[in-house]
Structures are given as structure tokens and as C-alpha cells.
Amino acid sequence: MRTEIAGYDARIAEERLAAARLRVVKEVKISYHSIAAIDRILRILEEEDRLLERWESLIGTRLETGGAYQQDLLRVQIERIRLEERSLRYDQRRESIAFGLNARLDIEPGAPVVIEPPDTMSTIDESPERLEEMALDRPDLRAARHRIEQRIHSLSLVRRGYFPDFMVGMTYIDIGEFPFDVPDSGRDAWNVMIGVRLPLWFGKIRAESRAEQSSIRYLERSRDAEERRVEAEIEDIYNQYRIALGLVT
Image 1 (spheres, one colour):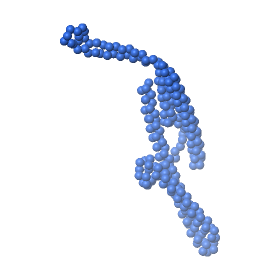
Image 2 (image 1 turned 135 degrees about the vertical axis):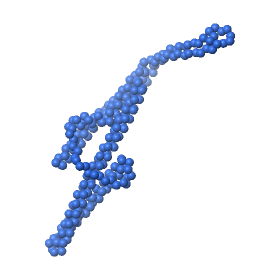
Image 3 (image 1 turned 90 degrees about the horizontal axis):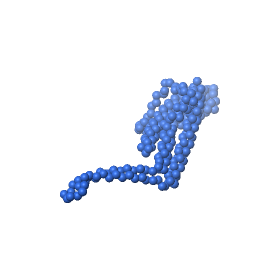
Image 4 (image 1 turned 45 degrees about the vertical axis):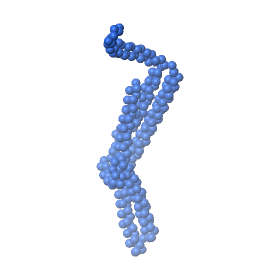
């Protein structure tokens, strides 16, 4: 039973490794699409600025001939300043995301990040119910179930303390021959021992059993809470996806 309990530690470690891998993949994909989106926004802002620059030049020319007002020029100049501020904020955000992406890819933090925008748009073909079913099999939840099973086996091991332990031993004795006339000289012998160890500290066993039961209840409630959180997270993400898809359409 101790061997089986220790085996759960290996399973939990494997699930934690799988969860870490998924987390890294998720973070890299989010960083990739975030940078691609920011690059697209910056290109649009640059196009808007070039358009306003032409308007500014046109209004300046018309001001010289009295065909425009000073406030028209001011409005265009203020709008160009706002565009520049937005561009600076997006540049800073891109730099921060690129720094984190390089760290995840084990690349020099200050290395330039060039993103090729995706050619196609990802779509979700599964129903929300199917997505929730798939999410409930994620590695961290499997690890939580392994922890519960491990504590259940630990409880069974603790309850074995109510039973007596039987011990059987056998010893072989090599008896050499003596030069004197001694009975059984040179005749080897066997020694057999049988023992019983009775459990007397029942209070200690009951306390350990209660502790294991409390641990099982705590882990079960934590698992249930995590499952509810995952279901809510899947529903929220799916709703965000539908809204985004509607905007694209």
C-alpha cells in the first residue's frame, strides 16, 4: 500500500508537467495574437496619421487664401497628437508582450519580435457542453483527483493499524566440529521464531484516521470548486468568442 501511495506522487508530478506545458503553449499563442493585433492597429493609426497630415497641409493652404478657419487646423493637429499618444501606448504594450514572449522562448529579452499575421481565423466547432466536458479532463483536475485517491489509500493504510502484526523468523546456525567428544558436535541447527505485535494505541490511530478523512473532504471540496470555476471560465470564453465572431462578421 505504501508503494501504491508513493506511485500517486509520480502521477501528480506528470500531470503538473502536462499542465505547465499547456500553460506555456497558451501564453505563447496569446502573446503571438496580441502582437499581431497591435501591429495591425499601429498600421491603421499610421494610415490615419498620413490622411490627417494631408488634411493639415490642405487646410494650411486654404488658410492662406481665406478658404478655411484656424480652428479647423487646430482640430486636425489635436487629432494627430491623440493618434501619436495612442501609438506610443501600443508601442509600449507591444514591447512588454514581446519581452515576455522572448522569456518564454528562452530568447534574449531585448531581441526584436517579428510576427507574421495569421492567414486564417480560428473557429470553434464544439458545443459549450462538449468544451466543458473536455476542460474537466485538464491535467490540473486530474492531479486533484489523484490527490484524493492517494489520501483514500492513506486512510486505508492508517486503518490497518487496528490489526495485529505477525512476525515469523528463521535462523540457520552453522556448528563446527569440536575435537572433544561433545554431543551433536558438527551438527547444524535451525532456530524458528514466531511473534505477534498487538495494537494498543487506538487513540492515535483514530486521530490519524480523522485527520485523513478531513484531508479527503478538503481535497474533494477544492476539486468541486475548481471544476465549477473551469465550467464558468469555459462559458465566459465561449461567449467572448461568439461576440468577437459577430463583430468580425
